[in-house]
Each structure stands twice: as structure tokens, then as C-alpha cells.
Image (cartoon, rainbow, N blue to C red):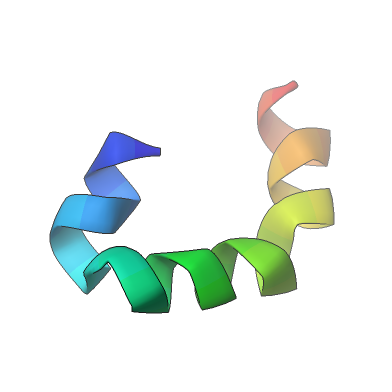
Amino acid sequence: MKLIRERFGEVHAKTWWEQNRERIQTQYL
């Protein structure tokens, strides 16, 4: 997720992704 990394930074994006991965996959995949 390039946009997320650019907006939040690498570390924050990784944490955010772990917290929201299931919801994102449901919406976009």
C-alpha cells in the first residue's frame, strides 16, 4: 500500500495494516 506508507511512514503503516488488514481485504479484494 504505497499511499499508506507515504502518508503515515513505514512503521506506522505496518501497525495500521495489521490492525485493519481484514477489513481492507473485505472491501478491496
